[in-house]
Image (cartoon, rainbow, N blue to C red; front, side):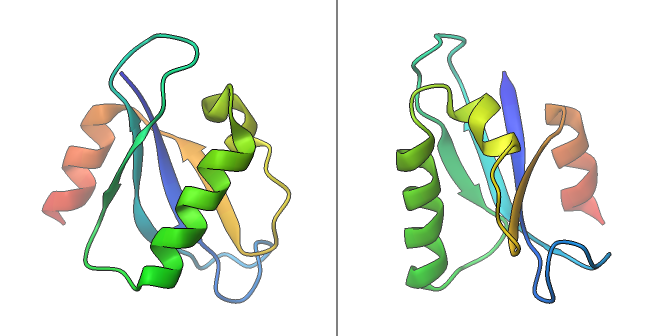
Length: 90
């Protein structure tokens, strides 16, 4: 299973602080599979819409293309599924 952590950088990506808004999870190893977004908490509709937009513009190969997204406020970082479990317990 492949997974990206969706991060929002409120003061620009170059700053060290960020907010993890959720996880994009590819449950299938099929190259053209779409991810499922699993939010870390309830999010405003505008944030959910933005995530859906990023997925749509990065297809196909969203897993690779989202990692190279050029955005001052968003980044997508690969993590292992067990990292998500540890982070949720904190």
